[in-house]
Length: 437
Ligand code: AMP
Ligand code: GLY
Image 1 (cartoon, rainbow, N blue to C red):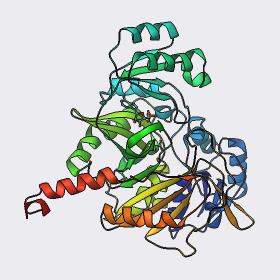
Image 2 (image 1 turned 60 degrees about the vertical axis):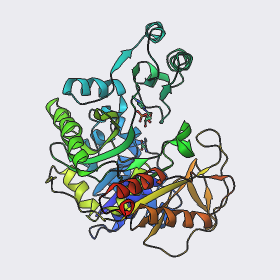
Image 3 (image 1 turned 180 degrees about the horizontal axis):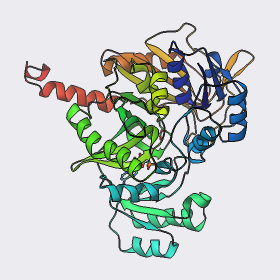
Image 4 (image 1 turned 90 degrees about the horizontal axis):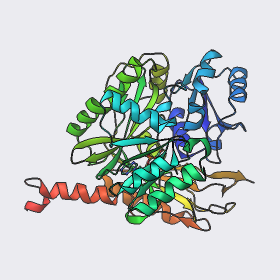
């Protein structure tokens, strides 16, 4: 098979790496790709939202399967357009992608289908929103309706922060049309987890749980980013909780979308808060998470190409996927200043020269210049290690990071630390565990 991957981040490098392992694959293209991806796929300079150019390329090269990494082309309707051109593509239609493309659509859908989520109100008028805030209890959360590159959500501790957020979104229109409507919702407390499922529109299979680290600094301090690291599995989600999430969130979402005439094909990502009242949906995404993909795909034993083709062809069986028991931890090395301003063009040194099955370097913002890798984005590398247990995976990943250097490099030093603490606590609470000796 010939595969085209669309995107240029660490997630797409992880996709290319996993897809390459399939015996069914003879050639991989990536549009536009990055420095690391160019080592395993042929990168082509087409932007992810240039749908006509992507269709032309897929036809010319007789691509058998196109895999879309990021949300923007999905929300723009790339799947509808490829299918119209009789090209096989993995992902949801424009209508189904509204689960991520419009938070108002997603919240109203959850409300109709009784899917647990934070209590919310929708506003289209700035003064109405402000009036509501004046008598509201804090903390609460202000969200722009549409896509805002991960910056459209503000958790507000007090009235002044909330007023500033609505002024920026609805008054100054910093997200343009994406901020025409806003949601103001209850602030949930608990642990955040990412649960992903692959569906063919009716049936689905679950991927193993992972946890992201959204904030830029250690101990979850500072502004939100695209994600600074992830690990899988997580001790927060045991099999009982996973059953609950499947029954209360994933299954009703897939069934509800089908019933409402927008069957969901592709990756459904539920960002959940595990509250004292059980799991509640913070947001849906309609694609693999980044960096969750880097922590989950290395643990998947099954052939991803088979699963993606089954999704396209309506042939998901619902059979459980097979997973490595080892833990996987991905730490993002970023350009200092990210998620704000940062500079690029620095040479990356110390990258391993031989493939190590226990540590994989997924590239995100890198490009190749004269045979050398240089930085070209905010998130630069996703250094990913497998280990017997999370502790070994963490030690291994930070050992690898010590050797990799580029100017103004920044990374979190506590990826996986909370999971490790919880795993140790659980162990010492087990009868006969270390705490009882
Ligand atoms: P989203 O873009 O919707 O994923 O939101 C980004 C981040 O904001 C989430 O990962 C959470 O950390 C936080 N967040 C969103 N909604 C809520 C909420 N209702 N309560 C608390 N935190 C939230
Ligand atoms: N890591 C969060 C996301 O992909 O949206």
